[in-house]
Length: 498
Image 1 (cartoon, rainbow, N blue to C red):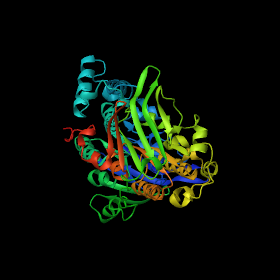
Image 2: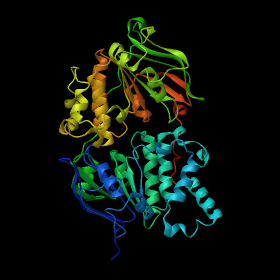
Image 3: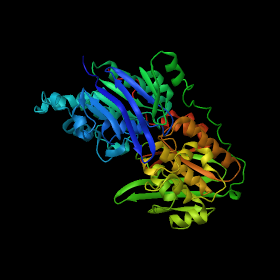
Image 4: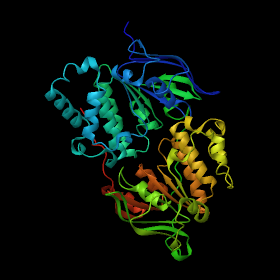
């Protein structure tokens, strides 16, 4: 009997008294996409980390092609054919696409397969070129990863797994932060990679129900670290899970916040950056960008990786000093330091998991900013269950929740949120947007969102700014931006690779 490519038995991971994963057992067959689904904090990323060797399991066993791999280091698992992607694909953002693929080919290639061709330079080059063509990366081969859209960066990571000859793929939230059109293109790409191989097995951790529905042969539902359902495609249980009847279903997105075109602009408190020029050494990241955040509106800042979005946000928060231009509050200069901007001007930046203290518990993180009238534990019930857990052991989505919660507790007048949806379940994102919409509509704050998922951001906001290569390409009503598909650089070709 041939062993499955990957198998886990009674896999358990604990952090102190918290069971992030408990007794997980499953065998993953070739030519199959298995989706691991569940709410934030269910144990999905912990499972991938234990399977990949990034985290040591507290107990249980992992087998790779029948070989015991429980104590095997990640690099050895990679050479036996196990590849792993992460929620944030920008770990090598300073390298070009060609450099990243070449590195994956040389370092991660499986020895038994590499030996047939790696000694012949022409064969290596031929395979590299074929991979660029298969994944529609020829036109961006010499671009650095940080300049690509999130969708194209994710395609590059899939190409890395492909060229490394991995036959077991662990994919962590490949659709997170992507627009709907991008997810629609990702689904046939994943299916083609599995259907076109006699050995490849994909384990897909994903919140996006549409991607799961279009790609998965099997779904495993995790709840609080336990597998509570294991269903094959087409079964009643499978339809229950992907249809949201056994997991969080996406609620109707809140209506677009109301803008106020007739309002006297001079009477509205506004945070503004005007004609901003921002550099990192000799590299000019932002050129002549102007943005405004009025109280009473949600506005969005959209663009690909490297467009300058986070740079603008950091400048507004006082973490970067523009080389030219000005940042004003109600027409006057804002306090110069980040601390004074938070205390005196009410400007709060939420930069994802970077805004949490990993060595403090969830409760201790919240105590540092407690004082506002909002009970964030009602908004984030997952955090209420994990108050004694160290923030650094939370999943990426949970750290994002905690960062947003800490920001809201400061009762900001201006809330700047960088990549709100990245790593979060859709129902959690909807709850946050609904809360922000309520606060904005009551005139308590203004919000500026940086988002990769531009289609969602345009629906959430009243006004949009679109950046490309550090320059402002569009500024105007979000409804007008929705009518301008030319503003948004495509990240996939419509057809799946053959």
